[in-house]
Image 1 (cartoon, rainbow, N blue to C red):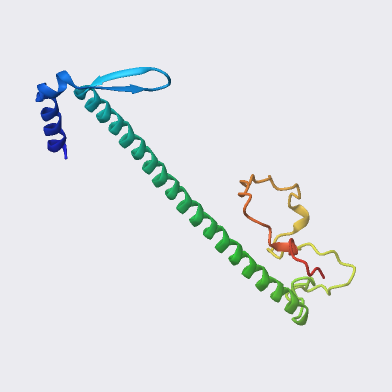
Image 2 (cartoon, one colour; image 1 turned 45 degrees about the vertical axis):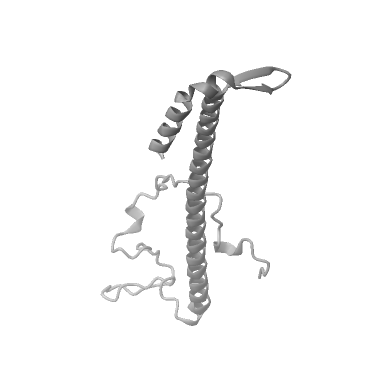
Length: 169
């Protein structure tokens, strides 16, 4: 291509008989332009170069926007999968919650240790509420320090607590 374009430039510039006698007149915005054949050729070359530059910019923009749409589509699919997993986990937890009254509630009823020699009475205070083997009365009960959690993207939705569902119980 480059060789052919170079040959065309040389052929037009060496053709002295037509370049010196023939001129073309153009009127653009009420202005008269008189160009020789060589000047007209170079104007066409400049116009073609500007056109190719513009087309290159258009195609680069199309590639960039296609890549952006691909990333956006992947992000949406990831968010949809995350919401689906959370909804499945929510349904599983709801199912376990519905089944939990059928099982004995041993975790909520404090039980005195069997090795204790003193009989357990109903009025005796429970001193080991978290069952870690340490008297809870001596532990510091101050609130724990808050942990900053980064905000989620606005596309995420809260699925716990039946938000956004029409069948409230």
